[in-house]
Image 1 (cartoon, helix red, strand yellow):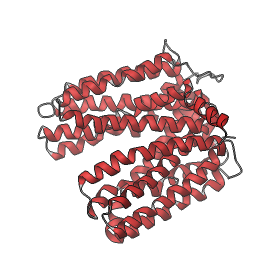
Image 2 (spheres, helix red, strand yellow):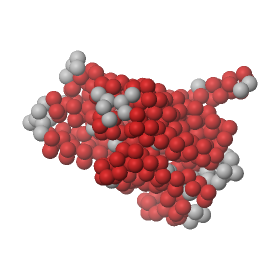
Image 3 (cartoon, helix red, strand yellow):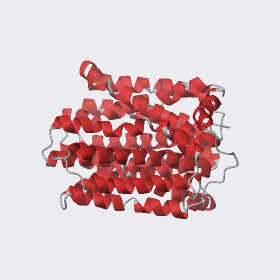
Image 4 (tube, helix red, strand yellow):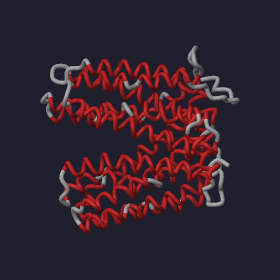
Length: 415
């Protein structure tokens, strides 16, 4: 690549728009695991029974149904900062305060109060996700969506790592209440990013009524060509990959790896390939466009699943594990960046929050349905057979690209 081309890409990565996307990704990724792994560890330490811990999974419901209040975010504009930044700041302030409230909870004596504060964390977190997705779509040009999505994903993963890895490490040196106060302070950079960023320049007027905000996004989407094919594509594109990844921890343990080896290689070492894959995918999308990237990265996603077949045959080899994790996470990073860019590119900027929330919730439904049968399949097919099935299930999503994003569609999915 010529030197001036490299400088041009580096200048784009370090541009204010892209840095805003990166920091917003961090702010969105940080809260996710605070109500899952970190909260579970706190409750286990306090001696809470497993039944109560299991029911705490229900506090994550807002992530699944965030499309229900997304029309409100499209319809109304707060009296400060504009439609997107105003709602973003409201969500971030609410998120920070609810994490502080969670820090003051008592898992033993007041578990339901703890559950309610955790529910508020997920509600404001899901709201922030919805507005940030809309902001990213409206602030970036179509040709910038690939790189922007990759930087958002990198920031998101970094936020998850700070919350899970950092939170649990801190919990060895301070109380969980103090850990949550530290995590609440980590929301502040997101607030500053919101305050110092610029409101997207949108020419389309927002919906003028709640009826319009609720129904017009659906009418707009289903009136377009291939609407149902696109929904099928969103359901299937990452199906095989999500099935394989859901049950990898039991797989690693079953073939002989220790929990320490899994933590070191899969979690910490594996973090870097997925971030690098996302960034590399974003840069490649600048040249390939979103449609062609979906083809290339989708094939890489599918082929990378075969690494688990090799690992199942070889057994507990750390070098093989590191190689499989690196290749798989590289494919996941690239494929997810292209997938997020595609979903953003097909939304109407007048209804961005609602349409993107609906599409991302469909992606979440895929993850739920993909997770359910994995144990049954692995038990009856064996690990090699299971991962071969996962590879085969990646094929329909790639074939649907013939309808949704043909190879010759160079610029973006919406062009």
